[in-house]
Each structure stands twice: as structure tokens, then as C-alpha cells.
Length: 397
Image (cartoon, rainbow, N blue to C red; front, side):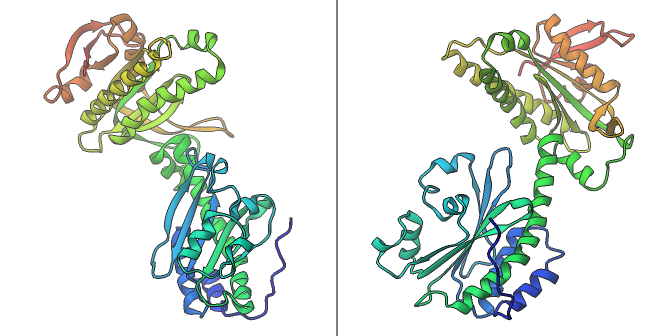
């Protein structure tokens, strides 16, 4: 359905439209623009008391976001919207529900007898706050994408025709301004989700040329799940996906909490680095390992209640220089780390099966944390790809 035709005759909001067009170029965040727009609409003589902007963002955890501004606020409040919101009473029968079903306007006179109007808790809440009129319109982005914007007033008699025309005149420019910010945020979110926050920032800054990169000294952690092939062959597909997600949650959240960056998930394994440019990077890595092991113990306890076998894993840890940058074909790149130090961490993870210790550290790494952590000397072992035996330590924490 096409957007409603908007009268472009002069309105009270012309100065606001001009500001949106020319005065927001240096503002990165749509919530700041939205709050400032509402304040400017008030200053233009429109009796605005409350406004909300609802955008679909398709974050891995969130379907969308709602920005709410009320009279007297300098900044908009942000609320994230869960994917299951459409099954809840707060959505069913709401203006957002009507817009999703194709409505091009929702207008509700809040002064009239409530029994004659729409039935939804939102309208009761607005009446209780003294609001008299409410209007909602879709905010159209390119390729048919529809978001939602709402306005409410406490003026006796509600918005008049001039107020409505002024509010409508703002929508086309706000749609353009908001789409740019939403897509920038989406690009940033996708990069953070798939390559990590640090790599994402580098890519957004222009580090996209194949073969470019930098040398980083870092602690490297590689983790792998044991017997995953057997699990994936014997378990239902959805159960396998749930298991992997639970396992990666247990491992990943402590890594992020302690300043590490997960560069990739490789099947049932993960690769993370803790750059030594961060204070206490090596100690932070072991703190993350401690919490990850505690989370895995809790996960195994939950799984045992449903007769699932415990999940076993191996973790290899080393420290050294890695090349951090773009590697791949001309049309498909991966932003990752490579180098002998990464290979060593991978070999130590594989040795955990042979040694019977779930966490193995190289001597180079152990020397950096030996004063703070109790380590177990395991001995020297031949490591594939390296000429000399490697002295290993286990971390029981």
C-alpha cells in the first residue's frame, strides 16, 4: 500500500522540516534526532505531549526498538522489543498491530466515552495521563519497509487540522533521516554480530582491502566441543542447535565480559583473542575461562535433569604475535587472525584429549600469569608442526 498523499502547503512545522533536512548531518543517533524534533515541534506551536518511534532492527536478540519522548524530556527513552512481542497482549490490538495489518492511520479521540473507542490498555493509560488525542502513522522506508510513529496531545479538543498537517509534513524527511541512521546501526550490528566489535569498527573505518592487516600481540584462546559428531548424528536437529547455542553462551559471555573478542565460531569451536594492549589481558583470559567452566558445569547439571550426557570440551591457550586482517578471495573476505601463535593454541586444544586436562596453557602464557594463578605443570609434549617439544601447564580453575 502506498503512503498517504501529504499536502505540502506551508505548515507550522516548516522550520522543523528545514532543520531535519539541513541540521542533522552531524548527529549519529536517531533517538537524539527524534527527541530534538519533538521539542522543536512544541516550540513551533504544536501541542505535542507524547510521541513514540518504533523501528524494526532485526538484532540477533531484538526484533525492534521503541523510542519514547514525553513533555519535559531532553532525551528519548529506549526500550528494546522482543521477537515474541506479537504473541503478547501489549501488541495484540495495538496501533502497531493495526499498522502491521496494513492500516495507514490510527486516530483515537481519547476524550470520548471509552466504550465507543478502541479497546486496548494503551488507550486507557493515555487517558489516565490526561491525553486527549492520539494519532499513529507508518513511517515508510525504502522497498516497502514500514516503521511506526505516534503523536499524542493533552489539548482540549485534541489536534486540529493544522496540527495534523504539520505533523504529516515532517514524516517524509524524518523517514529519510531515520532510514540512514537505522541502516548505519544495522550495518554496525551485523558486523559486531558476525566479526566482533573491534573488527567491525576497523571494517567500518575502511579496512576492507584484501591482504591488509596489522600485527597484534595477543593471548589466544581456542575452544572445541568433544564428541560433537556423535551428538549431531544422533540428536534431532533442533536439539543440536539448542545445545550449540547453550554451549556458546556459556563460553562466550565470560569472554566478552572480561574484554576478549570472539573472532569466529568454527562448527563447534571458537577462536578468541585478548590483545595485550589491554591491561591484565592474560589474567582476564583465565578469569573468563573460570567463569566459562562454571557456566558449563551449570549447563551440564541442567542437561542431566533431562537425561542428556554431559558436554565435554577442550581449551588451548597461547600468547604471541598474530596477523590480524583481511584474508580470502577477491570477492569474499574473512577478517581473522593467523600465524604460528594461533596454530599453537589450536594444537594445545587438540592435546587436551591426549593429556586428559580440559585447559592447557603454553609455557609462554603460563609465565605471564604464574604469580596470580595456581597452575599444574604437565610436562613436555611433541606438538604437530613444531620442531621442539612444548612445555605445558594445566589450569584447574
